[in-house]
Length: 277
Image 1 (cartoon, rainbow, N blue to C red):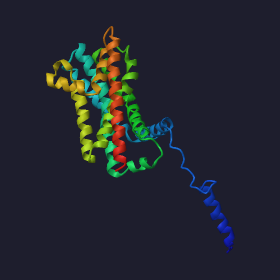
Image 2: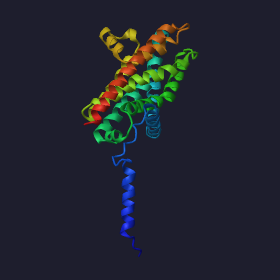
Image 3: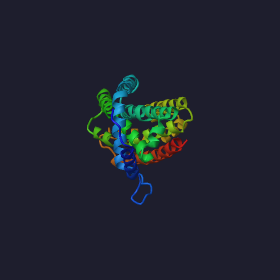
C-alpha cells in the first residue's frame, strides 16, 4: 500500500481550484450558449435518428391508410377536380399523421414524463429544440407522401409531370402541421389530452382535406379554410391541371409558409412556458 503525502493532495486540490476560477481569483465564466443553427442541426439529427427507428411502422400505417382511402374514393369519384382533391388530400394526410398527430403525442409525453427537463439543461435555444423536432418529423413523411402521390396519380389517371412541387409542399405543409402539433402537445395540460388533440387534428385533415370541397356544406367549407394543411392540398391539386396557374400555387404555398412560421413561434413560446415549470 502506498501513502500519498498530504502536500501532494493539497497541491492537486489547489490546481483543480485554479482551473475553475479565473486568473484574478473570480469564478470562470460559463461556456457560451450554443448558436441556433449548430444546435438546430444537432437536435434535427438526433430526432431523425430516433424517428427512423421508432416510427417506420407508423409511417407504413399512414401510407397504407392514405392509399386505402384513395381506393375507396375511386368507387365514387371518376375524375376531374374531385379526383385531384382526393389525391392531393390523401398525400398531405401522410404529413398530417406524422407531423401533427405523432408530434403532438411526442411533446405531450415529454412534458408528462419530465423529459423537457433534459432539454432545459442543455445550452441550446428553445427554438432549436422545437424546429429540430418539427423538421425531423416533417422530413420523415417524404417517402410516404411521394408513394401516395404516385399511387393516386396512377389510380385516377392524373399526370405525373408536376410531382416535383412536393419538394415545396412537404416542407411548408409539414412546418405548419408540425408547429401546430408541437403547440398542441406542449399546451395540453395532460398527456391524454395531447393525444386526443393530435388525433382530432389528423381527423380534421382527413375529412376536410380528402373530401372534395365542392361537396362540403358551407360552414364546414369555412372550417376547411382554417386548417393549415388545406393550402398545401390546394397547391398540390392545382398542379394536376393541364396548364397550372402557378401564381395561385405560389400563393397557397406562401400561406403555408406564413402559417408555419406562426405555428412554430407559438410552439417555441409554449416550449419555454412548459420548460420553466
